[in-house]
Image (cartoon, rainbow, N blue to C red; front, side, top):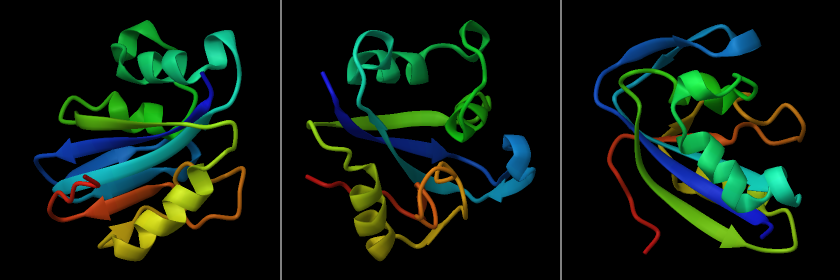
Length: 129
């Protein structure tokens, strides 16, 4: 299956976390919504991409910005939204979520597009449902 996804992450404390070439970033207590896509087949499918993201850090090579965040011991995945689609929607989703977010982590997950960020911050959780 192809599509996009949103991972909702909770950090229970303020944390400084090294995010690859972005360096050390202060992440405030709260919720982070990460948008991504998986438009391939096999190991690049939506199911495999999500399975990779939720696997233990020691079982995967750190590749994307989100990998650095998810490997932090305080990081908790709160929920995951799957958006099956034949079209890449991650940038549309990131822009829409950015409009209602409290802030963002600049350049996070958006090095291959023109978006400001694909990691949006909310002080309190807001559900899409």
